[in-house]
Length: 158
Image 1 (cartoon, rainbow, N blue to C red):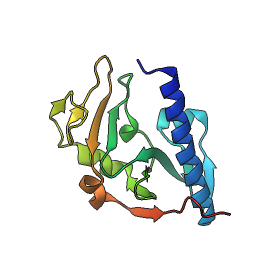
Image 2: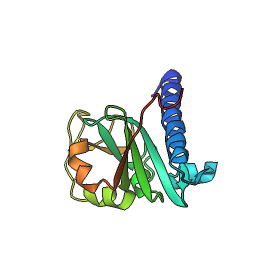
Image 3: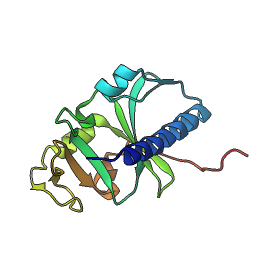
Image 4: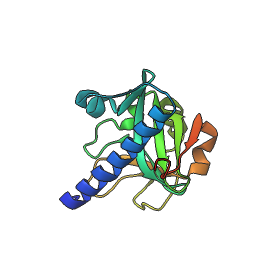
């Protein structure tokens, strides 16, 4: 079971990534609208940018990106949601990396090997006493699917 403090920490880190994403998109002149709670939970959409559904995945690194087929409750994960784009907040690159959700889903179709070792790549990982199915990849594994990358500077504003 995940502790309350871990849930709060994860929420705050994700919120920070979403806030920075909104700021970067607005600075670039895009129309940004936050999704409602239902779209966020059921469709896995955090924002609409120029009317495209975006799901932000915060605090990723080039060596550790997780692709979610099923969530911890065993329900459809965000790869099977309705967002047009998945955007990874890559902290080590100081960038937002954009992917078509359907491209990432297709990428996972050939992955069938399962593991209980969270350090293995390109295998379906399930945590003990959880119903999730997630695949750990490196940025290099999926970079060829990248639609766009936007670099940012944390100290852009005085």
